[in-house]
Length: 99
Image 1 (cartoon, rainbow, N blue to C red):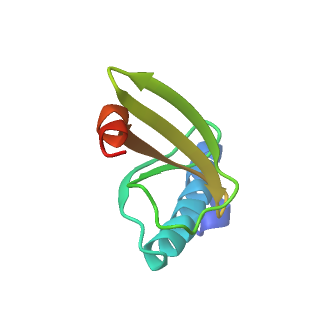
Image 2 (cartoon, helix red, strand yellow):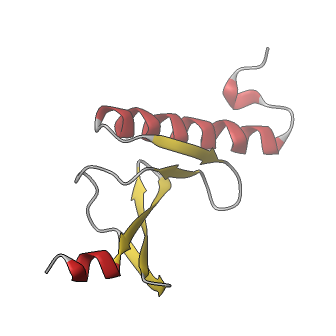
């Protein structure tokens, strides 16, 4: 088997580098108590989907939308060289009814 820095195909070296970044992020997320739902490699780098995290990620970007009384916030942050995303959902009607 070839050493990681001696791949015959350049794409394999890229994939190996992405896997290394993904593993570092997974280790960090696991230690922080996050639940990893999916890992995607390719494109601009590893993307990891998680369940809504405990408060360990700062500086996340957010996009919000409301459809049929459900407010959906998609958040994205960089963790250990990977893009990490999660979705938060709030029933706006139920939140107003509790007031």
